[in-house]
Image 1 (cartoon, rainbow, N blue to C red):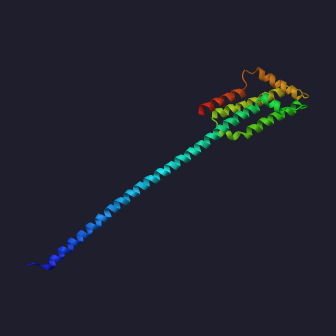
Image 2: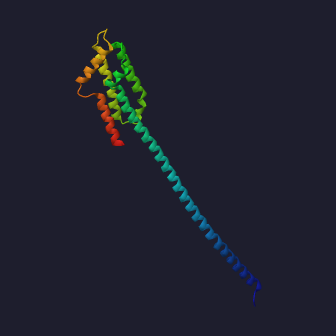
Image 3: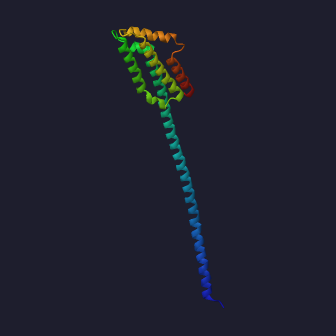
Length: 189
């Protein structure tokens, strides 16, 4: 004898299983497609972010290199401006006595140096030390020449004494510092 209740139970169970299989057949591929899309988009956005970071680093490095180049240019210009040969020609005025010329030369050197102190951030320590030594030696030469002047000496007398001291030196410290900075510049750029 056929048990109809049992038959319907088996049929119901079979239908539920088939229904569940159909749902799984739809949901599983949908889930896999969504997972693949998520992974692809995540990889794409990560790559785009890395490209943007690299572009930003490149732009910052380019800006830093430009600042560094300008620092070397300004350091060389500073050395040219404090070189006694150029400095005296620029500062000396007719009728100046040695005391006025001396104080004017020292003031210009200190002003030029303080105006360019921020450049030491971009220049090597050795390069900056060479520049600093050049400034100090230039001041020393000017002070030495002034110490040999009598009270009534003219600016021309002081200028002559400075040039005389420079002519006895083997090498001008300004030239040495300039060579150092130029060599560094060529090495790094």
